[in-house]
Length: 192
Ligand SMILES: Cc1cc2nc3c(=O)[nH]c(=O)nc-3n(C[C@H](O)[C@H](O)[C@H](O)COP(=O)(O)O)c2cc1C
Image (cartoon, rainbow, N blue to C red; front, side):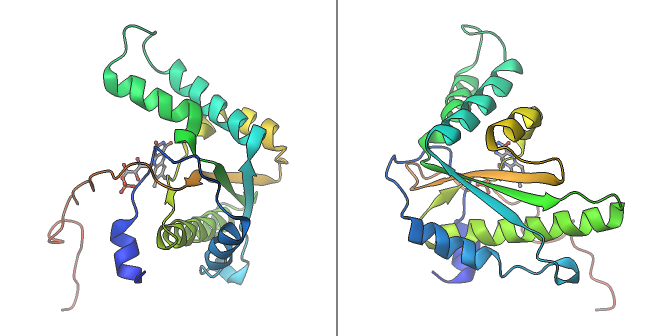
């Protein structure tokens, strides 16, 4: 798939087929993610690829924290029920990937590392799209970060950047329109 096509085609997928993703495919995607640029070429990213019981535990944790912010059962909107179903199961995705960055006391180095890991995560999402796989960049589960750390045994010297489910899409969401497609508000051109 051409890069520009993948950039537009990538959507946040919240409903997946149960089909497993071959390990070779996951390896290929991760081997593309690590080509992202990084501050001082530190390549600070680390990834945890989760499947099975631990992935279910992650999903349940996200479900619980989502439910906590919603009205009680019977008083929820259809959209809230749908979102909750996605959260509790990660949309039935067979795999989840967690991206980590090293903790750093210096704010600028921390920012640099976080940006580097975010770049690698973006590459990962695009590579997954090129492989016909769906993803959904998530920080919501980090509202219960302590539990995510416990489930995956993540040590305190690592910062959790983002989580994505990964699997074959079972939906085709409508692309959300761009806020400023003509680039009249969000881009300043200086010296042209
Ligand atoms: C930093 C970041 C955090 C996000 N966190 C969540 C999340 O916790 N749960 C979720 O369902 N989607 C999450 N999303 C996905 C966004 O909702 C989605 O990207 C946005 O609605 C645009 O849709 P698209 O990805 O299909 O273009 C997140 C996206 C980003 C970039």
